Length: 413
Image 1 (cartoon, rainbow, N blue to C red):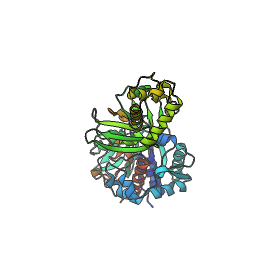
Image 2 (cartoon, rainbow, N blue to C red):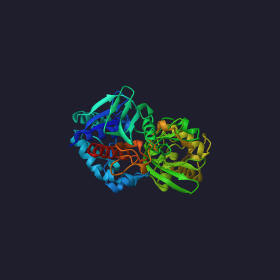
Image 3 (tube, one colour):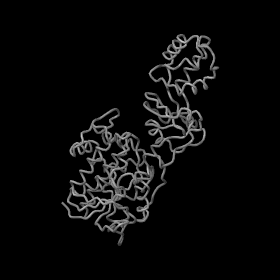
Image 4 (cartoon, rainbow, N blue to C red):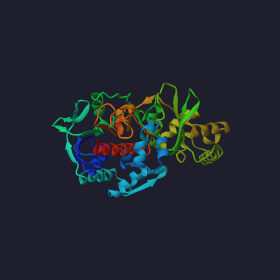
């Protein structure tokens, strides 16, 4: 046990884990949070269901962290996805595992995750204060506290868990980067990750609000002629382009989007191969033989995508179904199997779920999360230059680094 005084900045996923962990080891912990409620960003993850973690082993986890995954090896080995699962069940939150090893609360409510973590820190004796950190208190190369807007909080160790710059309405406004720079740390270029994608295609606006389920997605790169990402699931058309779970995942595989380089190729009928789809089209055309083609496909396609498909097909809208040729039918099948949407850029970082970039990991000790530049200063969570694919991996980064920073801060000499 310890009698250290610790200040934790930011009551998000990493901050709550760090504060509760340190307090359980006997530290006197003050947790600064500028929002009136803790865990604001947790509330909106996983469409309000909160994908808490991915129940995979450590090598699989590291392989899903494209940016500085090896840096996390110590933290995730010390507090694995299995440990995280057990931790949440122990604090009274029953979990369940769904497709792709994604774990959610059994209630499907993110608010229950926040409530469980709030109980965890309160029961551990953490003092939560509603204050905004303005600067670090540094003396002789050591962190000795935090200056807040309301008062100064002196401490033996300071743990920075302020999140990134994505979703500023939840309080992630980049404060952690300012504190890191004040301590002499390098902050790498900040970019959006897990973010909707923009398209110059005007048809996206006409399909705004259309959600496609159980479709195939391929992101193709015209430079290499290869697919850089493939997936199956759900996506959404918006006034600016594309969004939804598959698109957010795809965005983390794209580093730079240049004009005419990337396209999203959607398979609208992934359950049917070309031969099966041709038979289906023959049936639809036969059943609607005396109707215009523009009125023939309401059973086959969602209403909002019919006109964009017909425009690409190039057949006159008033052409009768019985006069559609075999070649025209084959061309329609090709469009349905590869409905292509050009991509022109990422949405702003404020709309991203995760910030790519952050405090340079070479300046942090991976075995403790302590700064190599300033003694007694620790970093955890999204403020670090690590980011993962969607599926519970980014929250696991928060749980593992928060846990390690809390332990290290409480038990350091």
